[in-house]
Image (cartoon, rainbow, N blue to C red; front, side, top):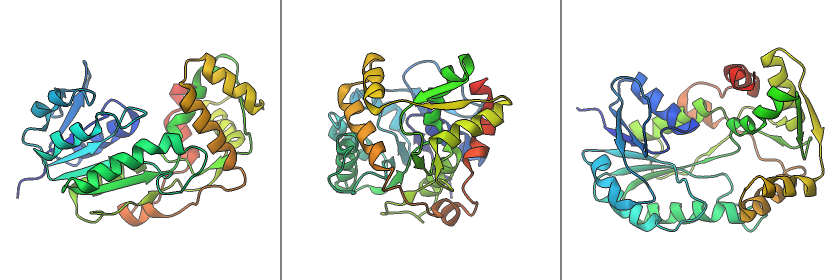
Length: 282
């Protein structure tokens, strides 16, 4: 039987890029959706298209069996047309959702609303589907890279905030299982990292990985809000993310073994992630 041809959206991002790399390494025909020039290994087909322009997707979707869908916007506007376009060509969608979906009315609901709507649209489409619900991405700490390179100090709120951050390679490995087997059809697995690690400890582990001391300097939540707004982050994003993170101080996310159960390999630690990405912080 011919192995499935898979279209990966978000292919130049951390998770999508890891999905492309793992599918390619496994010999699975893979196509990457790109908006501009991008370099991929020989054998990976890059095709132009934009999720913001559903009419541009038909060429990329032609001959495709499954889609790994990363939604790049903060709202669901345009999503029905994208799901319709996908449904005209493929039989399966694996959607990168969020652990916050289905958690009820909590701070951060604004940031999970579009994930909730995307999940609803996909489930109503008649497509085969999986909705991956990860906790925080370890790669989000790359936002500290410039401070670490230039000052060796990370100034941020919530030093004690502990999260089970996920290595993008582990999340990609789960996605590959969902795309190439039937083990996750019609389910919404919660995907977590190996252990809860505080932000202060994350910074220390990055310092160990780069071979020099790096320290965390805690600032007030109000100062962080103003810094994010001044940096150009949308107010609705700032007002959703920071209160949601503060709530996790007393109600941390769960830790599970989903990565190991699904892929057969335990989730990587944050220490391993820091070593793998040390060059980004040097």
